[in-house]
Length: 447
Image 1 (cartoon, rainbow, N blue to C red):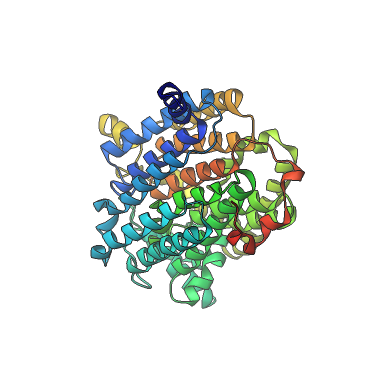
Image 2 (cartoon, rainbow, N blue to C red; image 1 turned 135 degrees about the horizontal axis):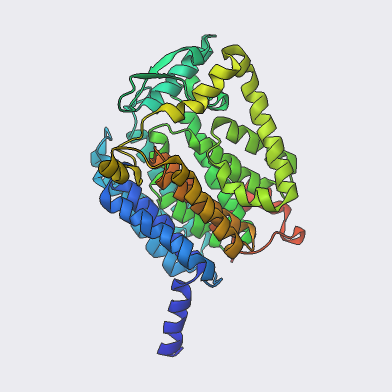
């Protein structure tokens, strides 16, 4: 190959949709790692740059298959983000983090190998590093954040036959001392198994495992050629999964529901719909990822409609027990009356420092809506495209929201991981094989 051909190949890779998507994922990860998803000037600049790349460059980028070199660089950068002081400061075993980071880095890089044995050793090493990071980063039954206190306390009350929506829980929101339980009823039911074991985060750890498995299997179907292991390496290197559940953020349930739905719907449509319904019953914040498929595809509307019906059925007993108005206010409308956060990793702290008020609602709702319409008209040619648009819509909405923290950007990043796993092809029945739904197929040699 001549030098000119080599340079042309690199240019094609750098301007491909998959490379730009990975770059956006890494930039969002770095922005959130710097201050654990709280306001940081450098982090905000990275987020704005990532959004610009997504809006301005992705629609005109070429379709080029995933590059191993690009993935390897992204794995290294993502794994090293675990060393950021913003992520390690609150860990009870911070001295272990460098060792665990090396384990995660080497294991994730090993997943890029074409040899089955090396990949499996890498999977074991990266998984062990992540699990060790999680268990060394928590004290069972304790965490210094209101989200954990809410879930741990509310599930404990439910196990004792009490209605958690009648109780107040201490709040970290500035100017607000206490609030009723703020999460949907599904959050209680999905985390109770962990609470029985002593900590709701154990249930969330299982959800993360299902999330990674679902995206891996999606990539196995659509990318093939061993590239599903590359996507898995990227996810295992990311600081998002473990740090998301160290602080017990429940948004992992909704994202897991979406990923399971995408994986299973080709052959087990109603099982997939049930999984989506259970996921969004815990957190509906992942649903905007599907806003474009909802508009464009009638079957998707039916399935998401049924999933929402399942979520309503799960919530109904709690709504009747609490009072429908009281319940709806606690899980949603209360947000309208809470003050905007000066710690949010978004534009409100900047706007608020100049005006003393939050960004006007018409702006925070209108601009993401305009972006959604514009991107949908320019860009959507496949399900992967629609997930990218949904992710960028979520990102723009979060940047303008009163609250913009680590958990909201988790939804964006894993929406992009799902898009990466889907490639850029439309689903055809001939592409779906039984082995793709078998866990035993994971260890099959693809080379």
